[in-house]
Image (cartoon, rainbow, N blue to C red; front, side, top):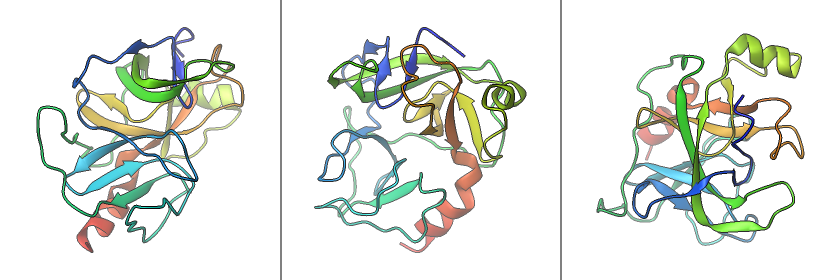
Length: 199
């Protein structure tokens, strides 16, 4: 676990993102949530992780919520690619991410357990944690559809979004005692493809 930089709702000990360097990041705001990191992965879908089913002002297309963590938002129109707006690749098949791989996370929100939210997009580097070490830290491995590392949304490895923040221990941002857990996007590919195929 990278103890000096971690994420829960925001980025802890991160740096402000260079403008337009993460054109796939989306800021979602509504009555139920105020700050949420999500990302474009197709011209008309945003993938995010949150246990909600209603965002005022958005057309939602949710056929199934898996573990109440991954939601597809169907946008009313298509996103046009530009220098400042683009989407990111997701894995094409279910595969494990190697332990110790250096990845990155970005997001908005708190920059510490007791700090105010940042309204600027922040980023930091994180490392994937070996499944056995994750199991040892948590006392069990959460689920085969999960992986461990520092938390945030999305988890990006080699220019591909491979994970979405799932959960962490409460008040564990500033000095993590256990690794944060991500939903492994590749494990949800059949569901994602079935939803997209029906649009």
